[in-house]
Length: 273
Image 1 (spheres, rainbow, N blue to C red):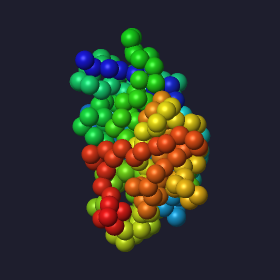
Image 2 (spheres, helix red, strand yellow):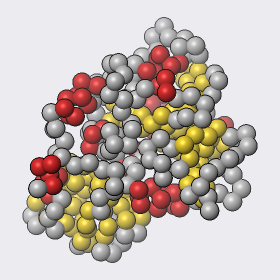
Image 3 (cartoon, one colour):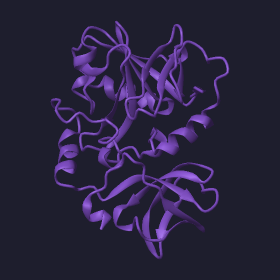
């Protein structure tokens, strides 16, 4: 049975104008030309040094690109994108008041008068939906959080702006990077991280022995720092963990935590030895 949840923490930025695709293409980690009606692209904006700033789904209509992103990130994202507009014929606007962001999973979702596209990260992730109002019988966001954490999928709240690298957060395996497109902001460090194997930590699902503590709680192994908890719900969460600590006893405060590797995640060989 298909489940649908309303995501009030997500909003929408509209990018319009004849240069919208070429404008965004030179800035973000994925290939914007692949975003067409019925097909979304998951991507990120980085600092010039290759650090994460914001993630978003790019959904397309006949005359606009719609970025489904964290509401809290929208003012800064519009400001940063606007700096690169120069002579490009584009407009940027917060359209969160015009769209209610939803996600559907466990089946197909056909929503009249809504903009929809499969979540491009995983086949099991579901569908992204931009409706005009909250859909009848939509579950609250907690239901989708449980689904997302079960799959190990990151959200803006799980990432650290100006610190996280895309390769640490699964953007490679989850189709958030196009390695064949041209230059974009932060590309050099992203490529170097991949080809030189420089990743030393990963965002990984964890299970707690009891309900997990608040996001940001340090995770330790003995007297060593092993990482920090990010998003969580009950026993399940995501944690940014050092790869050299993955197979050691881990604690978040007094609570024992154990990594639970999703099927899609690929670790470097040395970390598995």
